[in-house]
Length: 557
Image (tube, rainbow, N blue to C red):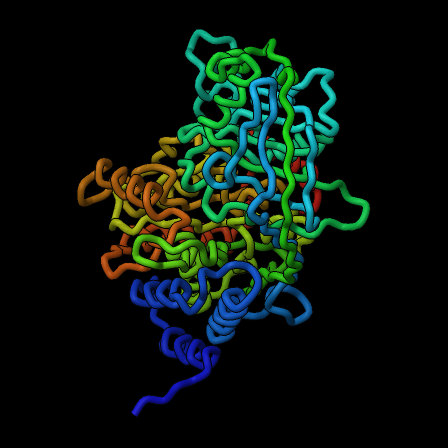
């Protein structure tokens, strides 16, 4: 006879089986990790989109896990969750969307020619014959002697950007070569910076021309879930984002420039010159008339804490994000749930396992905070909300360790470092890897800007030294198959399953490599947890000055 339990009771029973304190064994447990991922990535959780059934089930599950492990609520005042008010918008099928010029009307089809969205809680967007301005890479960087804008006023205009940094595609003899880190993307290359710059300058809309390599993902990723957006609710009196933002597909962009008598490839080259100045596309305008569904969501970060013994007001943080992409259009097999098994149910399992292992061991002198963020896929919103209103002071946060996508192809001879040259946590990583008989390999595609694309970046912007484990940062040197096998794993995941329905749990996963990476963080956390050392940003890091401003509050500095 079978007995049917309510969902929450079933999840709690699962937690009890997996995590009863009296049954805890030392070390990271692959079977438990698999079970956590299978649960979070099941169809029942509906792809874990913020708001609705998926969020409620996910938050309930995470809180129950932390409770059973014997951790304390970490959100303050006995709470397990921190409120993150969000606005969820969905652009509807447009009545009108396109460019007009002397050569006629260029209609734009959502998800084919453009992928546009809005961060504003407006139920109607109407743009009529707005001037279109090409701003090159849209960079204003006085410290690098670079300004794409000059005196051009963007108020009421549509800004068209190139993606990535000005030196991304530069040859060695071009004046811009090396000015923005060569192949390592700076924050100026991120789409988030470009939207922020458009907002600062009063633009009506911002469109970024998509390129596979420069964006670090194909058009299918850029156009997935078209028109949907989440944003943090802004306080009264704060600045407002642009009315419409998104990606412009490459061929559609070429047609746009041709309608103004310009060649896009030639303009790309011109934009790599420090002499470039933004200009209006002569005779070209942009119009849009579309409806937007607006939903206000009270989403939540989940926080737990393992208090320190002698210095509980100094904090280490281990984090991941619980959200995925919810449900979308049916794939070839009819699947609609985008389960986010690797991105980032597996990372979340790593956080829960770290909590279990540390709780079972000798207590640390410093406290450890376990944070599982909402709305990472929507722009690092949950972690950004925490950084803007931290439960634990960022100046007293020793370091942040983030799991976001972990490779599932078995043990590796190396660990991939994301964001080389940022902090001396990299030295800790090297020592911990050496103890495992491994080496540290810098990410092989620094131009992808992965350092700016995970939740640790919200902590870094607040001055907290960070380390990120991200399996797609470079092909690991796998014990079975070497670097070629590691590259093949990345190609398969990013090419076919990233943000798609097939990012699902598989019995074929080999988690030995992921566990080794979890053990690396564990070793560093145990060392820092009983240390009086405060990791430092390296000279030249853009975050060094932020941390230095609060040196006086950290003992021993």
